[in-house]
Length: 237
Length: 247
Image (cartoon, rainbow over all chains, first blue to last red; front, side, top):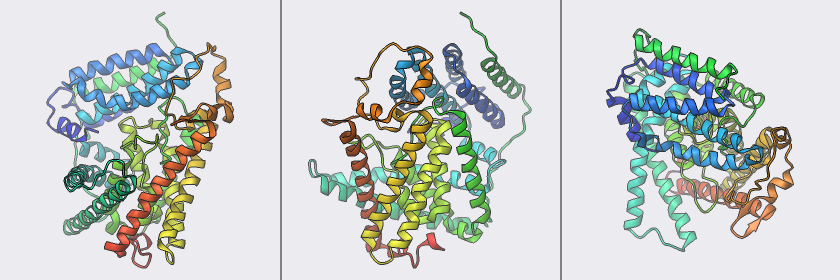
């Protein structure tokens, strides 16, 4: 899922978009997402795609990071084909919606550090949920590394046997079991760390929420204009 | 394995908005009712289980058009309340990467949440005396209920074609239909949708039963083997006398 790349880009990115306040980017992304969900016009969705590509360019994001959107595109193609009876336009609308929504979220997470996004979520969501988000995100990287090492070990030690389904299933279960045991050990260490640091039901995350720059306002107003443009009926054809 | 991948714009508003509201209602109730000390102890494990579920759910199994969810295992290890929180977090993160739309997060949370709830409760009931049988029955029943729930909700909301896993789509009909057929699509017949399912050399009901059967069997085998592995190496994790899920 290229989460490591996303993490790197969001923290070390140095474009004008990266400098915009996290709150403004979250509001803009939500407005854009609402516009995408509400839109039923191919032209409007295509224009949103063009805008997103322009934003990627402005944020100095390589379009290769947008390849993550191939996954939703794949699912959307299946659904688009199912909808082909309702016309080709309808199929394209389904595909544009899926890809645009994914591109919007990829834009947000590649230009805003995850701690800032979660700290904004903490203003509205229960602390428990935000804490689970934070630990999940961090654990994901560590576990990916661990599973990759475990799978390499299995291969080296001859644990994978082509055409032997039963052995392979047993091996997969043992790998997962070992991974979960390691994960549980890791979670016990995390608990001790949280205890030592005085955890009392909320992991403190600090971020600058204040919308103050000109660029913040431009982005939010831009998002509002897009939403209004989607809701109001118009057509260039 | 009952994770729904429908993109945004297909499920109608009157389904996904109430699903979100119910999900947030459940999360609110859980965060109010749960024992704070219990959460403090289990929070790291909850996050770690969510990460494991995320790994399981983002890897397609290739041989069958479904993926592992490890939802029942999560329920057994951390209990139904924190299990539901995990399901919501995982569904939302997966939606961020386009693995299903944002409009489906609430429905996915409720469907997979039911799997967590039923699986963990049944295991609590049956796993005390007969461990292996207990985990197998709990997983199979939880999966069947969640699949039935997924099938009904998606079938009702968008048409049965969306509820059925698809391996081949190239033989779809391409007849020219006009705009007014949009409404007809909502009432698509179940039999017609099932007749279009293909898997290996089979079509229709046999293909559908094979896909879900293999999926349920695989998830059950993996869950059972992991739970039995825990009984061997660290029984306190799953033994209901000590399990954190019970505290």
